[in-house]
Amino acid sequence: MPSHACVAGAASVGTAAVKEGGGVPLFWLSGAVLWPPETPPGMPPLGSVTSPWLWAEFELWHVMVRVVVTVATEFRLGRGLALSSTCHRCQNGSESILHCLRECPSAKEVWTLLGLYSDNSNLHDWLYRGARSGDAFLFFSTIWWIWRSRNHDLFNIDDSWSASKVVSLIRSSVREFHTIFAMHQSLSPPSLCLHWVPPPVHSVKLNCDVSWFAPSGYAGFGCIIRNPDGCWLKGCTGKVEVCSVLFAELYAIWRGLLLTWESGFREVICETDCLEALFLVNQRMLSKDIPEWDLAKHIQEVMNWNWRVSILLIQRTANSVVDCMAKAAASVADIHSNWSQPWSELQHLIDLDMTLAN
Image (cartoon, rainbow, N blue to C red; front, side):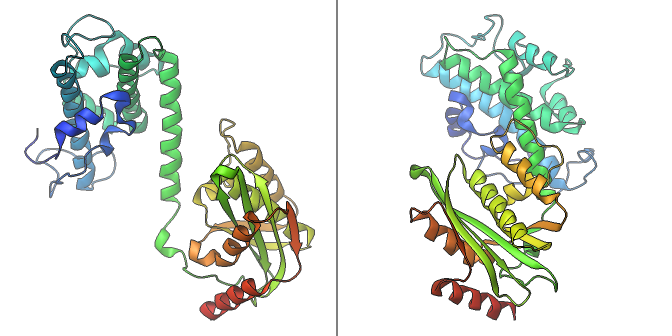
């Protein structure tokens, strides 16, 4: 273990990671890491970023791969779950770290299907080159899913994963990594206002929110349109059968946009407190693999009508009026209701919004 990194609880980490890989990527397994104050002498920064923590993160990967694979093997031998350290997949050679992740024919097949070159370097150099490669997400996702596949096959002898399935899981993870990375790059949370802000003159603001009670399979939604003075213009509530919170959030946005269009407003700012929904409707190329693809596509089509509409992210605290509407809608049987004016509880929240805005 490098002298400049310290990992706590290594044995428990390895044990927890034996079956199905522990359910989380290797670099999330350690709860106590002491980062080095600076990049180790002679070691260049990873990629184009010079921050020392990136090197430390790579070193954590290096340490954790060694710890998890080694302790997992020792755990199996110590508990009598295996008679030897021979690889259970190929039955040919000791299951070293590099054998498990790179040299075993099962692992090699995955690397080959992905078109990734596998060299004969030692573990440290191999991981280092992977971290500096053009797609580190793909490299480390491949390592992770090869490890997961190894553990799945160990505990599910009659239901082993094919190389093509592992590749599919890897590509799915890479898409998720890139999505999350883009979401964080496009957002600066401290810049979001904690309270509702009126729209510019000659425009209206649409706010949408949902309240989902999973066991029921239904979500309540609420939408409100307000003018620059903060006054209620139109509103709607309802219930919809949903498969996920994201679907419900997208549905609320879609219904809100339809209400705004039908009401004749053509300069619109739509606000949601769901980052994932915001990112999805702003994507140019939507993946048909996601269950919400069709609904997100409908929203994009509505946004392309002859009007000016933008969708922005807000804090939950700035969405209190529609939060109240959504919770009320979730508790009643009405499928859809339009409101020309707010009820008393909503009016109180609207007045509070304007007090904070002023």
